Length: 218
Image 1 (cartoon, rainbow, N blue to C red):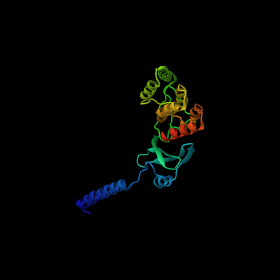
Image 2: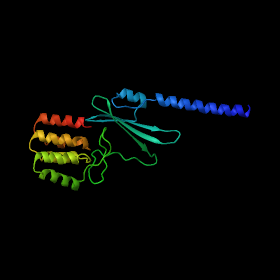
Image 3: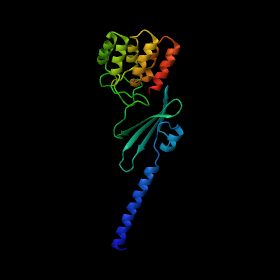
Image 4: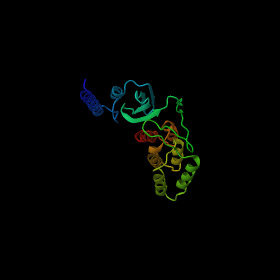
């Protein structure tokens, strides 16, 4: 085969390969919010691990790029209706043993916690910082001022259920305790400890509403 014909064949092959990659990228499906478990499995294949808690199910997948050798850990979280509400991907170093996540994540200065299927990894306030915030809210002259302080603080802070419950106890009545919960719930890092919050409330109707607030905030 002549050199020119050989070069033309190489160029044509590369062009065809590029077209195939482009077409594959356009048709490749990705996991999206609201998908069912079956739709996710059709895209990702069978999960390596499955788990569940009071907020829904989780499927865990491991994928490896045969070209680069990179391994990915993908966790897809579902709500109680079986719809996707969370997608978390991280790279895995096969040479490093991956520690199992704690069943009850602790909160403290610099303590990283996994916050369930929908919320990214965050940090709750350490005890000293929370005490400062707690005292400022508690010592504010009027309830409106207390809520204003808490609303501003919650823009960048994360809390444990125990901290949330303590803040709720500043107020006497259930409606105001639930108002505190609405502000803090999107920033709670350990929703599996929600019993701490329920114990603050007096009536079953308030506890039921608290559960809805926590679930809807994830």
